[in-house]
Image (spheres, rainbow, N blue to C red):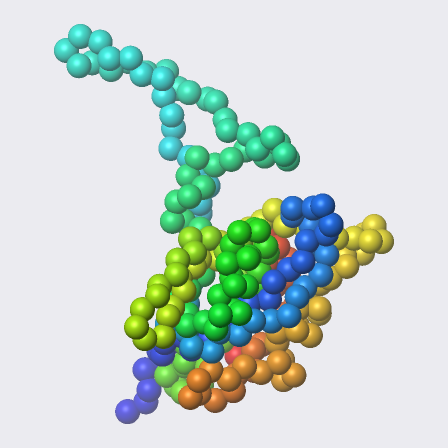
Length: 232
């Protein structure tokens, strides 16, 4: 009987590559730092924003009259970000977001790295494996997201500690252009740090993984806050 073509298997690793902001800038990425590999993942769960992401439920000014009747007028006001003039969605904290939810075992240095990224709003590019292909038994592909660390939680316990955090896809990061029109970094810089045969990763008690390289289209999607999936 042939194998049933399905994904299976738990996550085994999480790789993070932090970005470095330009001096005095809060959104402009000037370069990429060194990769940080968590080789003992408990979970790395992706979530994808659907078409309703960013939709706002209508708001009304309401007055209650006799017999509990209510009379309403549509509230057309907006919440503006004064730094860039963009409209802040009222449901920006909702679950309909591109994100990785991670729980990993970490060394003291790795824990500090995540806390610093959380406190400073540092951009990070995260990668994970999506599982194995039941027809081949091999890793089926890899996923990536560029965003900020949120919802950090430390879990001290008698056994190995874990840290929980979420990486939310962010679409407001920009790339520094020392020469106008020429980004200082692109997908090739990321690949040289985190993907390909020169950057394999070997989770504990597992075979080494060669993470698939990303291309220019993938890089654009990452900068738009989207999850990028690369099948092997």
